[in-house]
Image (cartoon, rainbow, N blue to C red):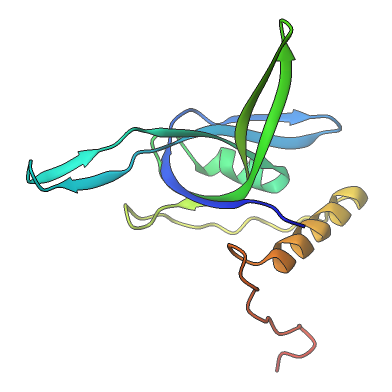
Length: 158
């Protein structure tokens, strides 16, 4: 299974759009703005490059947590899979890249944040199975193509 994983650093450029879709699955979307900076020797100062914009989608509990935690302008780090959305409008095929987030967090190199652990609730049947599949995919794919570090099983931990 080859999936393109990206790690993006930027600022939340839009309000988070949170809604329930299909059979009640939570979805949160926002646009991420990332502007590269470089030092210009001739000007003797840092200059901004062109801003790159990426659509970000968050599903299930991540969607709920993002909608409660992230605001427009916040510096964030987003990790996820690059997807292509395709649609047809007025006889023309259109497409765009979307980052399907697996993790979103504040960029603590730019400020401070406070973490509050979400209360645990038992997911319903299909949601629990999907959550387990997501975890298995995340651990089997590793970070940026690298094998994940071995984690002790709960039974093995002493």
